[in-house]
Amino acid sequence: MKTLSQYKNDALRLEQPSVWNRIYHLRAGDDIICTMTQPHFFRTEVVIEGFGQTWEMDRPRFWRSTLEIKKQGQHLPFATFVCGKWGKGGTFAMPNGEKIEFVQNPWKSVNELHSPQKVHLVSLKRTAWWKSSLNVMIEHGSDLLDRNPWIVMVAYHLILERQRQTS
Image (tube, rainbow, N blue to C red):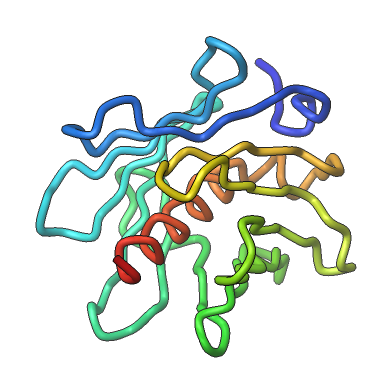
């Protein structure tokens, strides 16, 4: 199975195949690499499947902006996402003190993931303002990104949340 860094020169796309379902796909051509589903309409739980693993993402308290990520079937989170000031992204905190910064600019159509050394890892670019699909470009391969491929789907979830809040 390929890692996320091995898709460096491939055209990846995040999209929602049907408006009626809350299912989202990360695709490389016709192949589905990763899937994100929201099984319950009134809950914040999200399930991410891909690369031979399954993760759950949840907002433990509705009044806080922190997200917790855990492996399916486990109760304790192994990673968190903490929003930055003024909703301009935030930081993914993983085990062993590893971090990835999510840069979200509401005035641009490009969102980015950066390593702790400020290396540009991934770009998520909106194709059109009326669609929820994004083009994903792996700018720089990273072992941290290969061990945590769910980060791209959580970033997509955060972008979709912002779009819903502004509409």
